[in-house]
Image (cartoon, rainbow, N blue to C red; front, side, top):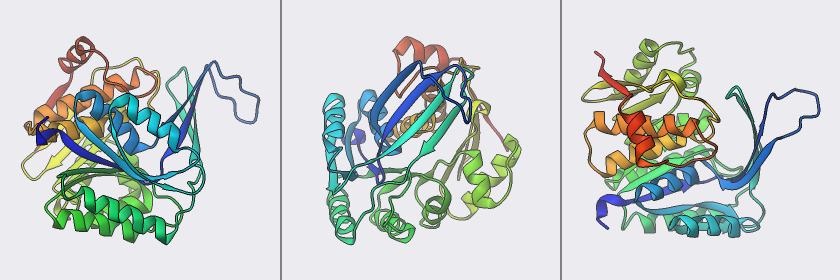
Length: 314
């Protein structure tokens, strides 16, 4: 396999995702779930699964509780993903996702297991050992208790200084610190970016302006997802707007991670910006029509791909 297909995904605060499907979720009442699914997850893990399905040579790293590591090892073995996680004492968090028939999803995200200075040092050693043989890194998700945003931002700065490309997807304080480290590409959604800028982004024009601000701050590629309203990608060269077809939404869980995987795949293949965006938007649209992450069949992808519009906006 060519070097173009090698990638490292970083999940610092992985989880077990417990997803329950039901007709309607009633607050303060007993809710009977129709179908449920428990699986190893975390944003970087989801990205790794999609990239592996696409044919990338994926190495997954991060910090994982030793009580749950076997479940992750099994998942990685199933997908042919190289396991480079650093184990820490304890159990991963469980994230509960309640998915309703309307497509609405309520997330109940628990804090992760606390990490020590020794854990952080062990991970850092692993990360920069991988940097000797890899060019592209996807850092996605939240930080566990005990790991500061400064340390995380320092890793991005150091990787970028070594000529690596860091694709970054996080929120809140981690997003803020990560943006200051100027990763190669960032992918907030419009809510996360709005929170960062202390403003509400209601339409594509406002999102484009916000993405331009990131560009001006030294972010080479600012990709902002807006759910059913599509995706805006502001790069130094152009601002592109992709709009997916209307999908029958089953679950939005993992749609953003699938978009990140699609963008990463296009980058690994050295595709033009428009082709990469169209492909990533296709995968993300497909993701909302199913439970869990997965790339579907070639026919399914082609059918959606042909309905995704991409336009250049000034």
